[in-house]
Image (cartoon, rainbow, N blue to C red; front, side):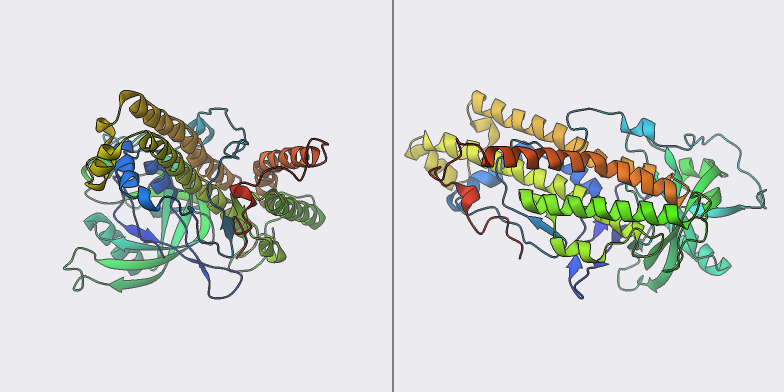
Length: 448
C-alpha cells in the first residue's frame, strides 16, 4: 500500500488504494499519476549528485520486481520510442474535457433548500487533484481540513454517505470536470487522539457511480474556504451495481450488440497482451491476466480492464524515469573514465555536483532532462485525459467503442514492431554469429 498526499489547493486528505490481484493475496502497488507528473520537474543536479555517489556499484543491472500484473525488464535502449499512441503529436488535452465554469467567488450562493429537477440531487464536491477515479475503485482518505471534517459529519448525519470527486484542471485553479465519480463512505475511523488532532478521520470509500454536475451552488466558499462546495448532479444510470449487470440497455439495439462489442474488446486486449509478451515490451502485462478478462457492465468487468490499462500507462511513466537515470549514469561513467585520480578522489568525498562539471557535460545533462520532460509529460497526459473522456460516455455501448478506440493505436504500434521483428529475423543478413549483448541475458525481462 502506498500513501499519497494530494497537492491540490482544495484537497485535505492523503489517499491510498490497493487492489486484489487474480492470484489471491498478492497486492498491486499503484503509482499515482500526479507523482509521475512531478517527476518531470525533478532537479537534475540532485540526480547527478546521487548517481555520482553510487557509481562504484553501477555495474549492477537496474532491475524492477516483477509481479502478477506487470513485468518490467531492465532499462535498455529502445529505438521504437515511448510506446504511446499518437507518439510525437502534441495535443491540447484540456480542450477535450467537458469542464464546469470557473469558480466565481462573487456569484451569489443559492439559498436552501436548493431548487432541483426530478432527476437531480445535491451532493458535496471534494476536489482531489488531477486524478481520474474509476468506478468500483477503492480509496482511503485522511481528513484533516476543517471544511471537509464538517462535510463528513454532514454526510454521516443525513445518511447519504456520498460525495463527488471531480478532476481538477492541472493548468488552472477552481476549474473542475463536469463528469465525476461518486465516493461512497464505507468506513470511518476517528483518529484525533492518535494524531494530536492533525488528522480527524481515516475513511475508506468505493467509487459507486458517475454523475454529471449541472452547476455548483456555492462558488463563494471556494474563495474563503469557509465550507465545502456543493453541486446539483444527475446520476448516470448505465452502470452495473455491486456485481449486477447494467440495467440500462438503451445504447444498444439489443443484448447481442453488447455481447459482440464486449467480446471484440476482450479479444483486442488479449492480442495486445500477447504481442507485448512476444516483443518483450519493457512494461507489459502478464499473460495470466487474460484468463479472467470481461468487458461486461458489472464489477470486475469493463472498468477492471480500464483500470488495468490506466495502471499500464502510469507504469510507463515510471519506466521513463528509469531510462533518464540510466542515461545520466552512462554519461557520468563515460566522463569519469576520461578523468584522472584527482577527480575520483573528489567523487569519493561527495564533492561532484552539476555545476562542477565542464559546460559541455552540463549541457548534455540538461538536454537529457528536457527530452525526458517532454516525453514524460505526454505519457502522463495519456494516463489522465482519455480516462476522463471515458467517464463522459453516458452509455455502456459508447464506452465500449471509446475504449476500443483508445487501444487501437497501441495495437497498431505493436503490430508494426512485430512485423519488423519478423522481417529482420527472416532476413539473410541475420545470422547466429551476431555478438551477444545485454538483451541476450536470459534473466532480463523474464516473467517471475
